Image 1 (tube, rainbow, N blue to C red):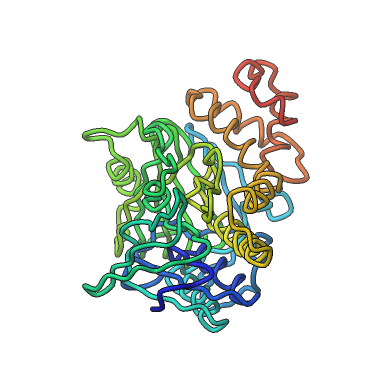
Image 2 (image 1 turned 60 degrees about the vertical axis):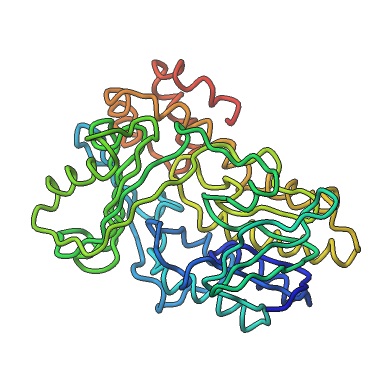
Length: 397
């Protein structure tokens, strides 16, 4: 590990990997550090991504794709099921990844391009110079290294410690954290090409249950609930255990994942002097689904491109890095985050009765495509009684 780089990246997830690969291919010297001893573990993700979203970055590879999903299903609190076929399901169909293999593949590509990568290497503090980030103190195998860099990218996930240490307020209110629990199960009776989403305050208050197949009889079965809904006897794992005992009493649990995801608005600004923040660290996960793989990859690649431009110009101050912040906010992804936050604020407060009404209404609509935007438009048109609850969403139509 050298003492000086053009770019230092904290975190080895998809955002950090894309930032590293993008920057090193343009000639920057890049160091990426990951605090865990292995890339891709532990998996804290349902592992789904839309097909079109993934192929924006790299072609699909069977070695890290578990399942090719063709259908999606929405199940209302009353048990009514709405099936979304491929022509209308959009990004609700896609791939279920093996994140352990996928994340390593991304890091390998960055390393092959020339990035230096280090595991079990923890950033313990930022190096500050004249009030700005100038690198990080890295601890690895009992040794301490002062690693200086022109630009540091914080890609350290929902914990977001580095940005906080550097003076950025990354606090997420409890009500805007989705607490999640997931089992990898085998021996269960499922459609291996269909994802399922269960809604309702009984099964997952202010959240939802998902079943993401990973092969014949194998699936990620998990749920997220609003942080404010969690407590003794009704934590995410409690809800999950009740769901699994009802739906898959003979299934075998072979892995348990516990974690959280932010469903808040992104950070007010994702750049500072000599620093950019990407992916979950920037709170750029979808407020409805909690999904963040694509968002991390998109912002990681954009941050890498911005770093190249800033270093070529010889100016890495905040103003020079602001194109990163401005561009992702103006992108289709950024606009979707704004809209989906507004949707989340409405739908997490609806009663089961209202949720039943909405899903029954959707099933009657002749939608060419199932998307958040078309959903809002058609719901207001078909259900005038919902207008009051959905009034905050009309600005997105």
